[in-house]
Amino acid sequence: MVESGSDEQEALSIAGWAVERFGAPVVLVTPDPHRAGLAAMRAGVRDMITPDSTVDEYRDVIARNRWAAQSPSIDERRGRVITVASPKGGVGKTTVTTNLAVGLSQLAPESVVLVDLDIHFGDVASALNLLPEYALPDAARAAGGDPLAVKPYLTRHETGLWVVAGSDSPAAADEVTATGVTDLLRSLVQSFSYVVVDTAPGLSEHTLAALDLTDILVLVTGLDVPGVRGLRKEIDTLAQLSLPLEARHIVLNFADAARGLTTADVESTIQAPVDHVLPSSKMVPISVNQGIPLLQSRTKDPVTRQLQQLVERISGQQENKIRRGFFGTRGRKESA
Image (cartoon, rainbow, N blue to C red; front, side):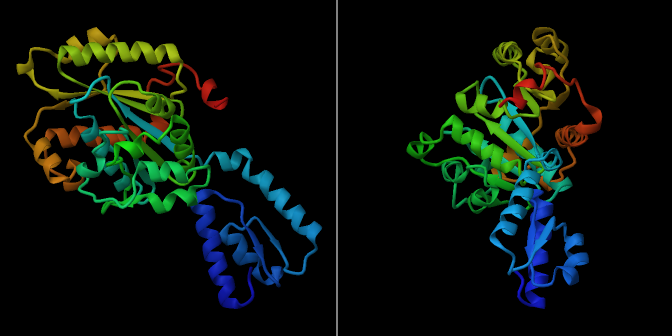
């Protein structure tokens, strides 16, 4: 509520932030709506009312703007969920995920959040050289559709990326349910342009909860027979689930002719094209051990270039629409 000129400026500043960040319908309570009108309109204020308005008038303005919060124009502000998954561990999935998140954050500072959904063994914090105060269980408990309730439990990386770190406590991690994951992701997409999710190997209930809200899926495999065969099984399983995806990317990691397999061998086995090939590089383990993603250090390396291309493809997905509907239609998401 505005009582003075300085109060009005502060209120309009907060209103502008709420509109830009959350797409929230804002009502300004001011003793002089006519004087504040133009500035309020520029800040995105949806409605104004005076402090001496009747109870019925307050009810009316709240009812009008509650409906506006549920309208399609607000829903269009929803961020996009990008889930990175693999059928088995040891394929460099977290390295791909952290670089993807850092790369997107360089394009959209303060608008990207990375969620470590490897419930028991997540190491996103280590990969980013972070010492978080809070972790996934804290954020999941706070979530309930209110993005402001989750924000205090996020950790900010120096690149402007926000992080929901994995749990250091197995007991606390066991408290995170699939429903908690759903609530958390639904809260985060209200305030971030990109929600990047690093999952545990395989298809746990937590991963399936994330996949049900996923717009873009990134599948990662190494250049080895067990990994490639596992990826084929995972693709078949996801096809049966009719996931509501906009697109998917398949990433072949650790590509090296000396391994005895080629990209063509992989494509033949999984019966789908490989979208990105990341060659083996000595820079990757150095990057992991330092906790500095390649796209943060901007190392001039073939792997870095390929990771940057992945970021560019995903950030331009709205225009590219690459292989839309690979695992089915979007109908299931609408009913979620």
